[in-house]
Structures are given as C-alpha cells and as structure tokens.
Image 1: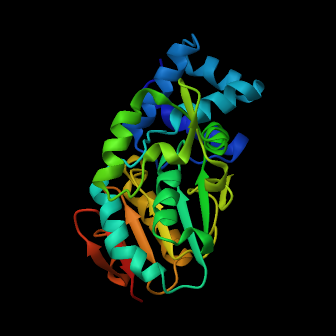
Image 2: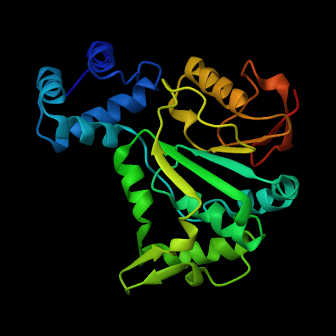
Length: 270
C-alpha cells in the first residue's frame, strides 16, 4: 500500500504524465481511495501502481474513475429541491433562455432530478443543462440514464417531499429490474468531461450546482474553483453548494448574498 510520504511523488507523476492535477485534493481521502484501488487490482507498491498507470490506459481510466467520488441519488435532500423551486425558479422564469451547469454531475441522478422539476414548472423548454464530470465512466452512465429499481421507493418519497406534481414513474420506462429516463428528458442535456482543477469557464450559466464536491479539495483549490464559478455566473446568477460547504472563507464571498443558509444557495450581486 502507498504511504503518505509517497503520495506527493505519485501525484506529481500523474500531473506530468497525464495533466491531471490532484495535488490540492484532500490527502486523507486520496490515500484511502488509492489504497483501495491498489488492493482491488492486487498492487503491492507505488512502483507497481505507477508502472500500470503509465503503461496501461485501461488501468489509468479505471484509476481516475475510482478516486473521483461518484455518490448521487434522485432528489437527494428534498429540502434543497424545495428551496430551489421556491427561491430560484421564479428568477429563472424571467430569462428568455436559461443555462444551468451541474458541475461534478456524478452518475446523472441530480441532473435528471433538476430536469424533471424544470419540466413540472414549465421551464424545460427554454433551458439547456450542461452536466460535467472529470470521470468518463460517470459521464457514460449519465448519458445512458439507466438506473436500478432497488431504491426507487426512497426516490419516490423524496420526489414528493420536494414538491413533485406527478408520479415519478411517469418519467421512466422500466423493465422490472432497471429504469431508463425518458428520452425527452435527455434532449436538453449535454453530458461532457470537464476538470474543475485545470479547465476554464465552461459556459455563462444562470444557475450552477456543485454539491458535495468541494469537500474533497483543500482550501486553496476550493477558492480556485469558486472563482471559476464566479466568472461563469452573470450578475444575479445562482450558485448552489453542498450542506458541508461554504463560500464564507472564499475570496469571492463578498460578491454573493445568501439566499438559503441551510441549503447553501447563493446569488451573485457584484
């Protein structure tokens, strides 16, 4: 297994060889995930890992997918979606066209949840959703929009808690084992790779969602990403973070006002 004193050298190699910069990610989180990857792939040392990453493209792709956190579910934290409908959607109604960026979209559940609510609130026809992630595996799964039925009872409960107006099953086609999102809910979504650490402004968007991603970054990298979001928002645009995340210690904090303290919804004011 890799030790903490070997981590910096490994991350330097990855950055130099592949231009993926993980140097400002949480060290403890990185070590856990890298060691888990090595255990799964029967690698005993950092030398073994570096050799495989450099010489085996499939191993490198699997490595990126493993160390990047992909945790998501439909209508997770219903109170957040309820606040979004109440506090943000009325502003979005005033725009002739709406761009929404779901940064760190994971496996697509949050993106499709947003789109369902946009449809129910008569905003989907003028909305373009950009869903990005560093993980190519996550993007591929998101595009397909196929999900196991195992947790749909919980998804349905959360859907109604956040103000859902129909039956959640109306938005899927099910074969009994899996459900696939309806094709009309894919038409206005672009799923694509984007690296928050190294890539620039993706698109000017009236709403940016990046929930539970920044907690895996150190303070310096958090500030860098928040500046990126600031540059991507017009005046009066909205930024949404996870409940354990905050703008308070960022250099862009004074440029936002808090719309919902509990749900970490902010609006750019200058």
